[in-house]
Length: 307
Image: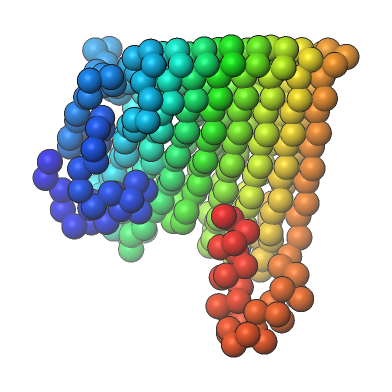
């Protein structure tokens, strides 16, 4: 794998990699494969009909990880991939994704990743996805990820998705359907600055008895940026669902939060909480009395809030 210093820096930002990871991985740089490795229990196979890969995880695979980061350093490049994860029964795995874009040119650069997960019965999956942008050019950095999750009986998935910085425009779409006894947790955090715009549309169908979902969204909108968050829960069985959307607005930022709860079963229990406001003055004062400047206190609060 040959990567320049910019691409290596992006890889550190989105996947915390300074070298090739142990185990299975697929690293994509500027629309091409920059490195790929399968393991004894995890096969990574390129698709024949469209760009992307199939990640096939064998039954009973435990304590293994898969890295699939994407980096873009070319201005004007529009990248689209379809990645399918077929996770067998009784697995325990971690999947690290993410995309970093450095755009120093005048043309827009973008990445759209369509990720579909099939989580087998009794399996446990941790999914980490980071988005990051940088660059001095006038061209925009665009990302529009779509994530689909299909969970079989008694499976568990914990998703942590974050937009770190530097993405000018994004629409993040997440869809999930849960079978009997399955459990989904989503932690989603976004910070926008300047004139950036970010949309997040998360919808979960709780179809199986005893299924549960917990969605926690955190957003910070600074300068003139805008965010729009939609969280939808559908309870179609005896199930439980909780959605929480907390946001901080600063300067001239705008945030819209929309809850959508639908119950089609009398034993469905669904809760939504939402709060939008500015940084509390007492938090700032407390930190400043400890010797921090106003800017340092502000940044510490935001960092803690986004987690």
